[in-house]
Image (cartoon, rainbow, N blue to C red; front, side):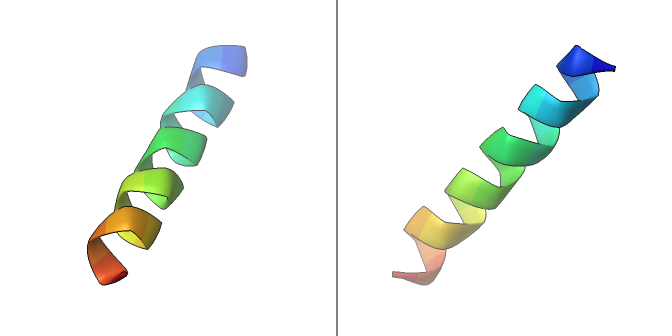
Length: 20
C-alpha cells in the first residue's frame, strides 16, 4: 500500500512539473 501511495505522489509530482 505504501508503494502505491509513493507511486501516486510521484505521478502527481511529474504532472505538476510538466504542467508548469
